[in-house]
Length: 108
Image (cartoon, rainbow, N blue to C red; front, side, top):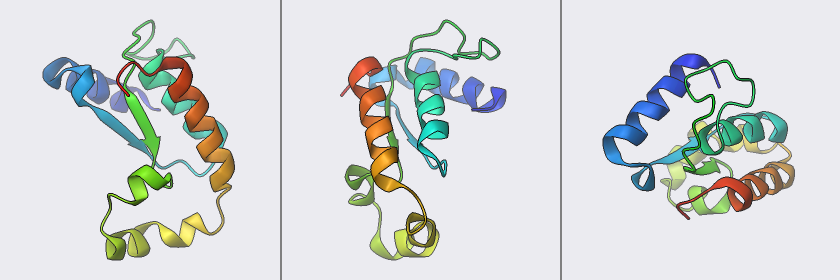
């Protein structure tokens, strides 16, 4: 997660309260999603950005997870996500995101 997005996430958590913020990721690989998820929950593991040492514990999902997919208008999901979903390791992404949520999320 780049430094600007870390800054935005931190500002939203401060403004609205971390219990009211849900982060939706869309990285194409489980490892990349896991790194971004860890950043918004446990703090920036690269020690380079605004979330270094900041444990927000935010709720975080990937766009391909069933909980989020069910919330998105089907035609929008089909238009924007479904083509990529066909080539993603969705099960691997779900496993990575579930592990991060179970370990670091405070607001499930």
